[in-house]
Amino acid sequence: MYVLLPSKAGVQFATFDPNTFEGLSAFTIHEKLGHNQALIHDERLFLITTDGIIGYDTFTGQQAVFMQTSSVPLSMGILGDKLVSLCGIPLLRNRKINTDDFCICVNDIKTGEKLSQSQTIHESSHPALADGIWFASDGFIHRLSEDCELIGRRRLIARPDAPLLDTNDYVVSVSDLGTLEIFYKETMKRHANILVNKNNSLPLAYDNTLLWFTETVLRQIDLDSGSVSTICEIQNPVVSSLAKSGNDIYSADDKGNLVKVSIGPPVSVEVLRLSEKQAWKPVLSGEYLYIASPEALHQIEVKS
Image 1 (cartoon, rainbow, N blue to C red):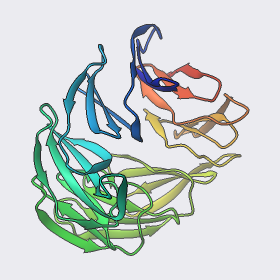
Image 2 (tube, rainbow, N blue to C red):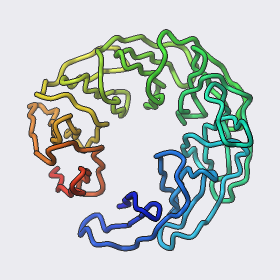
Image 3 (cartoon, one colour):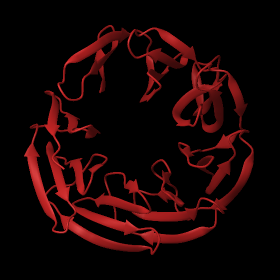
Image 4 (cartoon, rainbow, N blue to C red):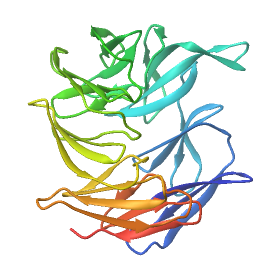
């Protein structure tokens, strides 16, 4: 298990055994972070710094690779042996970023070599990496090849407010008003439009199903049929993303509680108080769930 913690000298990176919670390694990253996103791949930690995307060895902390983007990376994802980043166009000698125009950059994840770059994109969303590169821009959903060649695009009804979701057969655009626009991955044909409800969290995608807390109600969306069913209602609004282990769904509400919902049947709800303030995104690793609050990092055994 890996943990990133802010410190006065930079960012502290620590590795723990997921079962014993024993510390395995730790080091400080002195580069200033540009965006709060981290990826782990093949024992390398990838971070977006103000210098660009850097891959660090997870044991020694040494810089292992630097991604050559020529633009300012804002978000990133992994597609096979490639790292794909959404980049802003630098202005005024790189001191500012054009917040209206972006590009997609594709790099070799081992060497950092830039393999391809898209044309300028207007008002883009973070790319979804599913059988190619998908992103929303200018009222359309676009699909690029891994070489950044345009395969096709389809018009969107609502502006997405979250990264596009990847399921077995579909790519889904989500708005915070509760609209889902579902497209076939293979053909880009529109499959369905669904209005669910206003929400404070992101849906969890698995197989061809979404689980989504729309404020206090957990809903299940069958993407094949387009049906929406209510699983349960809880007391406080959920504000974190969701984690799934078997039939158990974990999330954090706005009162600092960890909420566990067993979607059954039968359906059951358990609430564990973690903090008087707030709790953040739950993360599953092996037989344990980890969740941070302002006071501590909590380790909770997950029973199957």
